[in-house]
Image (cartoon, rainbow, N blue to C red; front, side, top):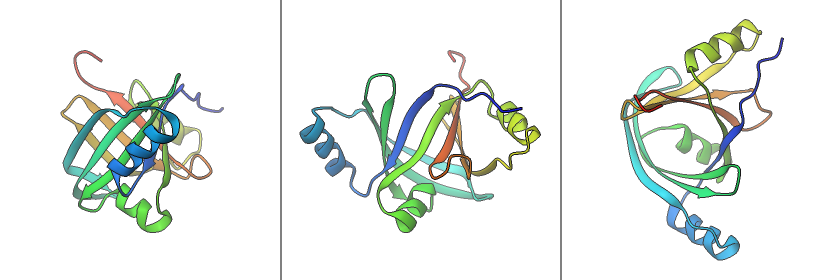
Length: 150
């Protein structure tokens, strides 16, 4: 039995130069990046090993969904790996779920490998994981709001 897919939350695009990408979106489409922030992941798990990395993130509203622009800043990460293998482009499709662990359990029970390539948290408020080989190209991101206001 298939697992239900939540509504699309955002599309993540990895870029080499965040400021250039933001300027391109503004000049071409008349949209601004919001919620721009640099995040550090000192204890993330990347391909099963602890890894430290950081990246700059910004969101562009596009109606029912958003575009997330991501520039890797330091360390080895899914974003540096993506740039090395593919150059700039669509990295992931993001979905919010109530419980990442429960969703992974359901995927695996349905026969999916659900291979987690990156597992990280932001300020103990949000956890996210990247899953490969489930979307015919892009990575799938599952997001779980963990804070008291979630």
